[in-house]
Length: 112
Image (cartoon, rainbow, N blue to C red; front, side, top):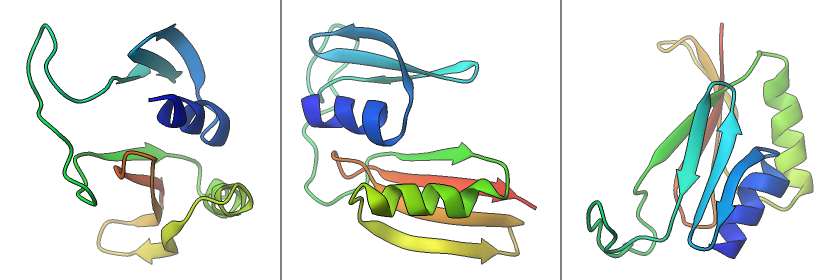
């Protein structure tokens, strides 16, 4: 949890909205990204993580010129890139894929 909290705060640059033991929420525009450890809690049991499996894909939209900037910033911070900036014409997106410390797939994309 500490590594994931630091990743979204320090690498992704998201503002912390609420920070508690076992729970952290980040403000991203009008939305919140809330993270907690997997397992049993008062609402549900989402089970154990499967190593190497993507449980979630999060996509963050940016302005087109920022794709290359984001890529360079992630590489500079030592984040392994799954797919460097690539155009996906059928989606009209330029995309960049990588993983967070929990192995969730993250995408930064721009529409064109």
